[in-house]
Length: 167
Ligand code: GNR
Ligand code: NI
Image (cartoon, rainbow, N blue to C red; front, side, top):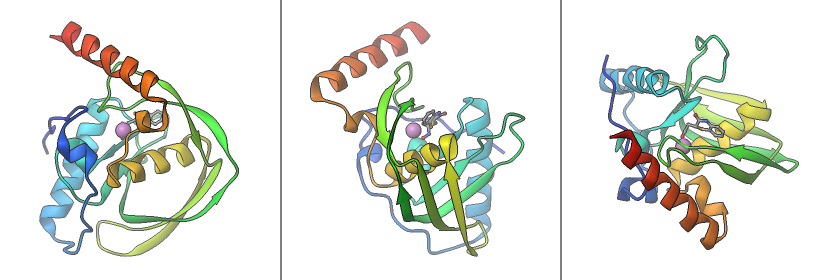
């Protein structure tokens, strides 16, 4: 197991469409274990592979309070979206920033697990938001892309300040 380094805006891997997974081998399982460990270490509710500089359609999620219900979505697709709401978002790749983004209230996603088996998951609230956020990462989209150019510029400045303070 390993904690992988998280890349920040404007690393190019965050802005490109990730490639589908075709090989469900032991290297994939190791990567997923490392992504779980990295997500827990960073206190995130989700983590997409591009955030650890890997341009593949993989994300891990755990929205449980006890941090003990991890699952992964590979090659995910949104089948159904219902309703709309504004939700507060953050992102480990734009650290130190938060804002409200428009999201579907409820989504149903079809994805593959680490063995390549297809499953469906339906989520509302935080789970819905998290699924949409992680799938956006696989499309090269960040939450700040939903905001006005002015707001985006402000949040990027805020992130840079935050990163300077961290050192
Ligand atoms: O940890 C995270 N929290 C969060 C809160 C509200 C909306 C989305 C998220 S996802 C984020 C982790 C992350 O950046 N995943 O890509
Ligand atoms: Ni994110």
